[in-house]
Image 1: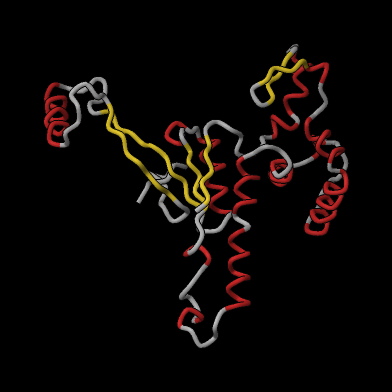
Image 2 (image 1 turned 60 degrees about the vertical axis):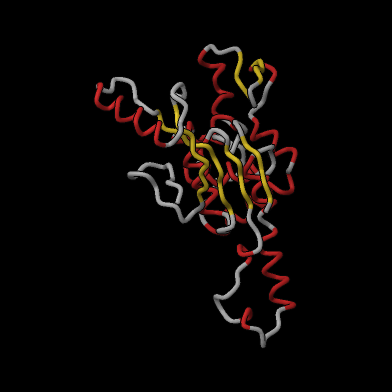
Length: 232
């Protein structure tokens, strides 16, 4: 198992971080935030332009791949790119910045490596060689400890789900969930029932929340149609 700690670090670069914020000078802004640091707008260029220049050969190859698959503008007129095209640009940029996506992508390379090792060295006469008996996720887990998953907004939840969709089934997320023992505004009967249940579970009377250690993967269902997954 590979353990990756995560708190508030960027999961996937946003369009705003890569380009939109840099047009803020037209609206009178003097500073913008990049990675939690304030930078004067007059001292900056769009981050996507810097990445394109820094990884020029890789960006050229990326553009050729995209143009071979569908219509792709090319060039640096970033306003010409559609939202769908920006999704691909964001992933490309995230693989070249300090993001959780890049870290998970690198660690999950163990998955195809184990599959290759199995294909080369397996014994055809062994029961383990039968289809569907063994898979790399039986031997490898990439676990991300998302310390504030409980408080993620829809944007970060969508990015987390995008990782589940992209990477192998061995990817898991561990986090701490909690419930208030007695939600604010509850009536007296509800409060009394909560106290009695807390006593049965040996929860200290001054502890206002009950905490749970949770684990989710791509197989966990979404809660009530939201973007948050239910552990199970």
